[in-house]
Image (cartoon, rainbow, N blue to C red; front, side, top):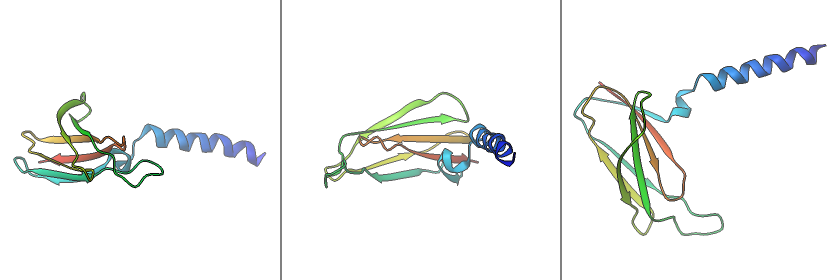
Length: 114
């Protein structure tokens, strides 16, 4: 009898955690003033079984609030897999940045611009 009760409770908890995204799932959060610059530096990972870093094109996309994703810019890594982006938001609100490097380990940053 006790086991039957645990299954619906576990499903309800799982559904609630999926329905309400956590801040950690959204990305690293930062606050900044309007007109300030935000610089992101990163380094790609290596493929399984290799020691060399992935190199190639890195894509930076962004969206305000829950709006559509828009391509901001791209860059290329150096031979060691390093990359860098600098942006300067020109409006208030929450800006989510999505960085997709050639190793496909996307990262997100959430900027609260005030």
